[in-house]
Amino acid sequence: MEMPKKGEKINKENYEIITDSLWIFDERDKSFGHSGWYHGNFIPQIPRQLILRFTHEGDVVVDPFLGSGTSLIECVKLKRNGIGVELVPKVAKLAQTNIQKILKNLFQNTNNNLFYEVITGDSTNKNTLDSVKNILLNKNKKYVQLVIMHPPYHDIIKFSNLPEDLSNTKDISEFLDKFSQSVNLFLEILQSQGHLCVVIGDKYSKGEWVPLGFLVMDRIRNDFKKQLVLKSIIVKNIVNNRGKRNQENLWRYRALKGGFYIFRHEYILIFKKIQ
Image (cartoon, rainbow, N blue to C red; front, side, top):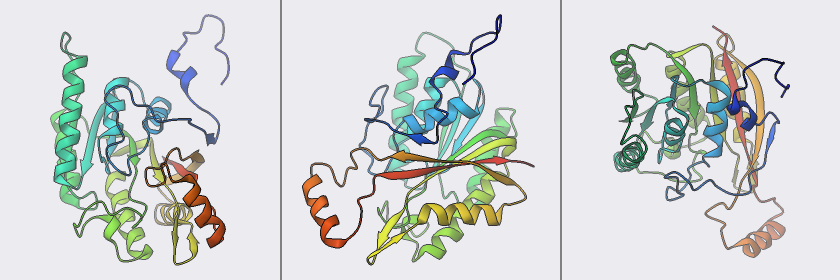
């Protein structure tokens, strides 16, 4: 990052922003209400970096695949408004409870004009988008500045038995179709020049590496070539995958025997809305 010019006001947040396309984190941030209880959630450093880079205080961030609420917790910390959508009612309730607890502890002696909402719904369904729009309307807002999407990596982890769950799609083609539907919906409320960021990884199936990250990238570029431009592909290391924790030797044996490599990375695709 360029050094500030003489007399220029320094934004301290900028000095935390990573500008390289390779992100290496030694461990998960467990501070401020973050925990790894939800299998498949991303580390807090990801939404933190995206929020710092692409929004300002008071902006609105939307997460259509909220999970345990990681991105909204970072919104609280960074003084951004946040709306999250979670398909599974039990998970949505836990996320809302956790966020409310953090808000109470943080703002108990001060007035907080920011808002944080959790919607239980299907991010591929227009009714869910309408619920998001109603929240924005009630807050005298029409658009959001950042959409962070961390969908299931197809069927690697079964998050629920709900038919709307992307982890229950029958094949890659259906997964891409449904995910594209979600992108299409939330693009409607993303302001021009705003950013849509997708966190996605690959999978291994029937003895073959499936490049899910690149398939998702290509699908978005093809379906929304008049609306979105790809700005960056970030590669992030995977730390202490819960399924492989304390089983390093076993997975090394399986990799050597099966002729494959152990997944140690995932992608963060950065798109910018151009109209």
